[in-house]
Length: 183
Image 1 (tube, helix red, strand yellow):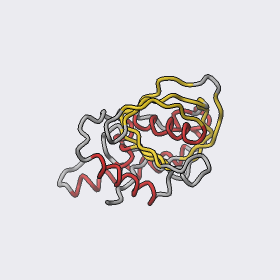
Image 2 (cartoon, helix red, strand yellow):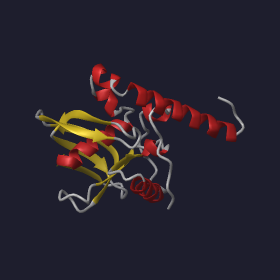
Image 3 (spheres, rainbow, N blue to C red):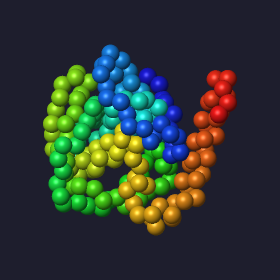
């Protein structure tokens, strides 16, 4: 297992819609690396594109709460229904370090997804797990928490967002230079 770098806001890979998983051959290695990376960053959820993998996978571990004792792996997931009742809750993001925003989301969702054994499931989720699922699915669709707030709220974090964008562009330039290319 290896720890992968968390990609920050400003990197265009985070705005892409991730590809569905069709081949499950190496899936367990990818998932193990994702868990290692998430734990290293002190996160509770991680989408594959946050570590540069273009696959429709995300993981969640909220076992430190009273809500569940299990870790969760979701592949090719889709919210197929949600409750009209919504609530506001503050969310942070590993790709937006230092930024936490109040986000309005449905309290309950029904999710269709696969697990690493390729079996399809359909379950109802709520609470922190339901919220984390919605957050990670947003990532896989190229959506950030800053996209879910008003322009006025986003302006409060303008300096931090610009700094993250610059950091991402600088990092991408260094990676490209190492490969012998220029941006």
